[in-house]
Length: 348
Image (cartoon, rainbow, N blue to C red):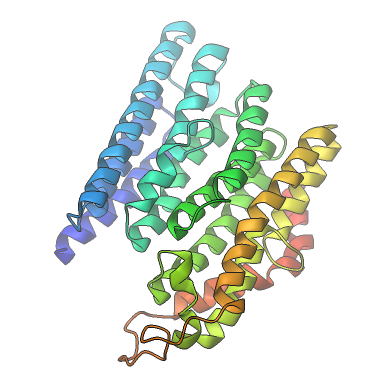
């Protein structure tokens, strides 16, 4: 892609998200979300592969549906309440419709079906943008409306953690596994959103760090299926020995970074007398942990057959910068000791 066009599209992505962040009026927020969608569509379809075009079309249709629902709900709110302010959502009907529209935007279960399909059709770089940056603007709006209907959030959160765990069990494609992982993590964030918005933000940030690291590992190995992971020993042995730690951090095992948000969320749910919800969420994390363990096993405990692709490949040194990978991997593994600082910041 022409670098000037790429720069304009990335600028559009940044601007769309910033407009949504800064807006207090529903029309401006909607406009920012639309800019976001329109800027990423050429990036998704840039390879002109039928699979990429199909994924782009699916993405466009779901995002357009969510944007139409959002616009409809904000007009309904203006009609019922007489104002367009995001933080003054008083009527339950538009609030519920907007919550569902934003859930569709970020791919929460039960309106998640587009996310694995779309992510599977993209290359890993655009998939990374879709899994991280594209979640920011809708999340900012969910945090601002602070939905009054607590039941719908808990239902969305629990369904997402369960479907995110179950859906990934039988997958062999890495991008689909990452999509289900994304759905499960978003479920955890939505569960605790009404009780502690700052904890939701902390979970979002740790999820970003871990996902960034995982995508970069797969990109460096040029891996798209579980089978191709088995040859990564010959390409990058040190990175391959560290990758299971990143994956187990995504699964939420101590003493890794990913344990911190899950631990704090379960603690917060227990404080709110939601012991059953916390139990179901914790058990659903075991489902996710299974497929992370499966990836770790494929990477480090199986030897690739001794054929041409399994022997050390002759290659020039990789042109990909490994500094972002090194920083994100260190953060994905080592940040748990900062948990007391995080809790101190979270308590108002």
